[in-house]
Amino acid sequence: MARTKEFDERAVVEAALKVFWELGYDGASMEDLLAATSLSRSSLYESFGDKRNLFLRTVEAYTAQSGEARRAAFSASDGIRSGLERYLRSRVSMLAEPGDRPAGCYVTMLSASLKTADGELRSLVEGYTAAAEREIREGFSRALEAGSLPSRLSVDEWTNLFLALIWGLNVAARMGRPRNSLDAMVNGFLACMKD
Image (tube, rainbow, N blue to C red; front, side, top):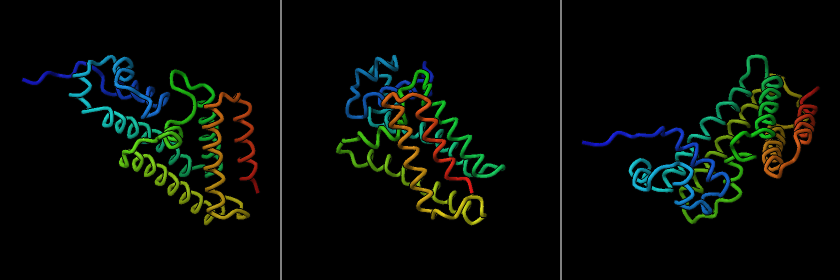
């Protein structure tokens, strides 16, 4: 008879996510993961297979959550300007006060640090980033077609400006920049959205 799991799988994935976020995939050892998750080696292997599969679960969990908030911003019923302002202000709050998570963005950190020879891991992170960029581009395209944004910038320019802001916020937070610095970055972008 198979034993039932005696742990909260979501809590284990969250604990592992924090380790990978802080140390990167290549820097995180099995000992680090075992200590953070409070699992025995056999429980971790039985439940997740190996370090690689646990890492994949953390990326899937994080990207599902972060993508949801971004999509909501681009489809806000009160318009893209209000939706993006709420999203960006919320993001600054999260970055400035990350709680028990490391500062910055998990995917941004992974994109900059994933050196492993495992092409599937790199492809997973790159695939998420490419999908997010497509969604962002589509959101700006819809807004421009509807006349909800100034047309002085093209779809590609709006997309790249927004991506530069998001990546800049993530890196600035990781560097420990103060909240007022993050707010100033957002204010500059929001000023560009005005007619």
